[in-house]
Length: 379
Ligand SMILES: *Cc1c(COP(=O)(O)O)cnc(C)c1O
Image: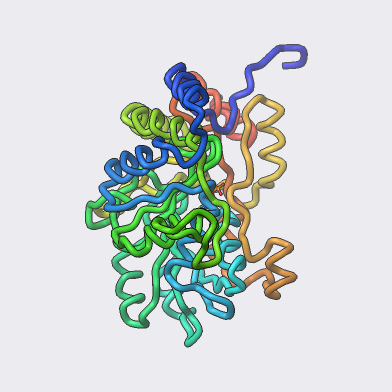
């Protein structure tokens, strides 16, 4: 291959067009760049899309997790039971409030927090459960509702990867009473550049999040009086305007993601020892965000990623176990062996290129290169 120019297939690629450009220009020309009309419009349309009663747009998914945890009452010294197999933000948001993320192991099939392991991790200090719908696969909310009811716990759902997912009870992810957090970084199912939103069925939660994202101002309060501590977690009208267009685009991008996933399943079938993302179990439905495979045992994950990169296929470790990250080891004394399922999956998982406009040719090339790198080339 030396000297041959090869196209690099990126890990992710947002779908953006002239409609987003026009929407941004319109806001710029209006002069109302934040707390303008696009904010409420974006919130209304997002809530409608997922079937939620309320939605509060915020500056990131992480900000949404932080405010949602505060809204269910998490405070200094509390414990929150959550998954170690997630993007680090879900655990970090707990630490922001000086609460303790208490990890429990994951289900080996869905890779979501295992309800039985979570139940075993509940103590007198537990205040809330924070299940993560990892890789868009909805966690078992029926089980977590029962556990929360039994111990009087709050629930916050990290749905930052799960737009367009559906729970076992057939409702769309986001359509629940407790706060559900989505994110809009450029690799997510839809993007506002940076951004997030919290849906809830509870008007009091919406009101508290709206206030705390805006320095603790009450909606009817005079300018610059504040009745509680708040943050600047606002999402600009520029971002909201992009989000409104992106919501409309989901009619195409969501089915396109599902198409790419189906094509990957076919293209990767027959690679020995490779574990593909689980098929939908029961009535739950994955909202496709990434295509993560677990490499065969005994394969060097980092070397595989390097070799794929040299062949023009971007890949990355996805995700590393949170409890084994330096900060979590040092702050909370975690070590290897605590969560064997998570650690085994995390050590073998890589994300492959995955985006709505991915062509069949690109999917086939990823499969071909992966086979070659794993020494399983078709003869
Ligand atoms: C993307 C993501 C977040 C955080 O979103 P940001 O908008 O980047 O702050 C949180 N949790 C999970 C599981 C994510 O994938």
